[in-house]
Image 1 (tube, rainbow, N blue to C red):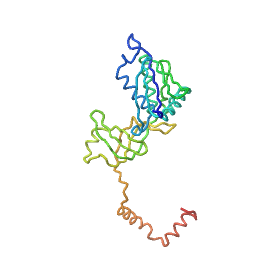
Image 2: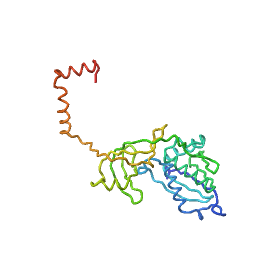
Image 3: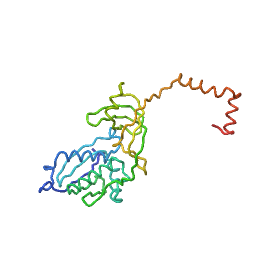
Image 4: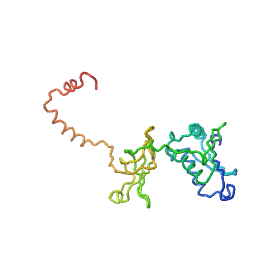
Length: 260
């Protein structure tokens, strides 16, 4: 397909005494690379991403990840910036974690990992036991967030969580306590909620770490216009105006002659 490009993640090393090849490369390592590649290319809303396809080739092990050329061009610029600055602090959280995962594997298993793209004169990123691609931890601080969206899933056997579909941040997975969900008598699914949560936020960029959100509170959220509620508020407020003659003239005086 002419609108496709690819990234190549080449892993050089040994498994035991044998040179690393596709025939002796474990499936769990392939899965890890595929998850890493998706987070590198599309760190945010994955449900709207383009198709990603995959090949594995010799030399030692070459992972060929194919997707839209637009995404590949953007990724080529990113690895160029990472290589030149030797920093991943500027990356989206999921992309930074993906690079850290590759760095951990390089050190732990003495692998040399080379990343390049199909773009002409591609930038290249080398990760090995001597590189140190890790985020500066003090860039991230504890923070409290408020989200609004539709609750699409709730539960989980080992790690209870809720899934909230939001316009601003896409789908968020937010960890919660099993007891909190058990105490909710009503059906939570497919209803609009406000969610109060705690997590980590980047001091420089304001970015939130979507992978480590913890639920504090579910807030009933009903954006419908409630005429009776508004009328009751107006009735209560009118008592404060009963000693004012001309309300329009009084407002004009309060504004000091400025338009609202």
